[in-house]
Amino acid sequence: MKNFYVFILCLFASVAGFAQNAPFDNNVYKHEIKSVEFYNSKKAASFPAIDLGGRETVTLGFDDLSGASRTFNYTIQHCDANWNPSRLSPAEYLESFTDDRLNDYTYSSGTFQKYTHYEVKIPNRNIIPKVSGNYILKVYEDGDPNNLILTRRLYVVGKRVSMSANIISSNNVALRRTNQKVNFTIDYSGLAVQNPNTDIRAFLMQNARIETGFMNNVPTYIRGTQLVYNDVNINDFPGRNEFRHFDTRTLKLNSERISKIYKDTANTVMLLGDPNRNLPNYTLLYDIDGKFFILNQDGNDARRDADYAHMYFSLFISKSPDDGAPYIVGQFNDYKIDDRSKLTFDSRGRWYTDLLLKQGVYDYQYIWVNKATNKPDDTILEGNYFETENEYQLLVYYRQTGSRYEQLVGYSLLNTAKP
Image 1 (cartoon, rainbow, N blue to C red):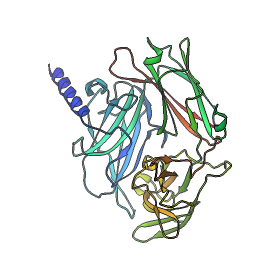
Image 2: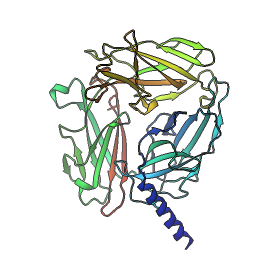
Image 3: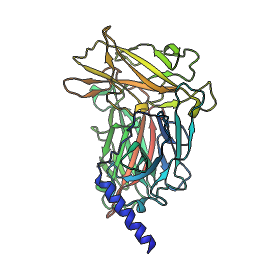
Image 4: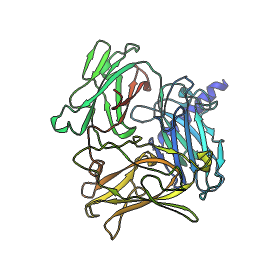
């Protein structure tokens, strides 16, 4: 009887949560929360996917620059392939508690900028996903789920399909110098599929960027238990360009792309000016596909002794505020196009901004937003080339007939440089 009441309470809490307009995206909701990392614990900055029931974990880490003593809780909620809440109660997708407190934290040491670093690994003794699928991780303050601090997308994979894929140039002759086309096949022989055209769908994205993704709802054709996706009009991505980057692992000397470093009551780093990279031909550069790593060569533990610096970016392009505005994005700010990532135009004809960032290695790029159309374009300032090295994440979802949720039954990481 006790378990019955617990189930009813969990179901009620779940329904109440569904009634809220909760955001299911990677977001930071408080300006004092910085340097959010979320990755498979095997490798920093990796895609946050883990196997269901395995020993893998994901690591969440972030800094609080407020200096206050705060109480943070976290939970995970099951979602469908489109990041809408599943029709499940927490008791149906969690093995243990519905939420937990963030108890693992440490204070910064020897830094100009004081902060508190928080960290947690999932699954743990208190939070264990029971079924595969998309999960949204929510961190909130003072036990109030509406007082969100941050959200992250988590992928729990119950592998039940096999996949093969290849990356070629676009079938469209006009796009062959710029685009990369991904063809793939899914073998679902391990699933009880009644209608392959409706029971299975696959999501493909470039460099873990949701906004680049294609949802494949119907295969091009079916061959036995294999679903083939190779239509000439699907999964055709702009190759874009390698990311720009900078390195602040040490603040004692100028590294590549750093012009000057000033130290007073805070660290200030002036980067070399960035040109327009939309050139006729591709230039080979090594990048980390938009990621960032928190690192400190001068300390022992970057989580607590890496310092923050005001990073000054300047962009030299022949565009005026009458045309639109550029924004600086990367995984470090979840590719958000907002006031915090917008550059300002000055009287000398350059665009500039400064960002408070923790020491490390960062990839970034510029997106131009046209004033007339309000549409973002990430190739007009960066270029677009077939030769660009990119990662692709392929996720396969399955909804069993009569089921109230979608399972994540396959995940594959593809790379243009590793066929």
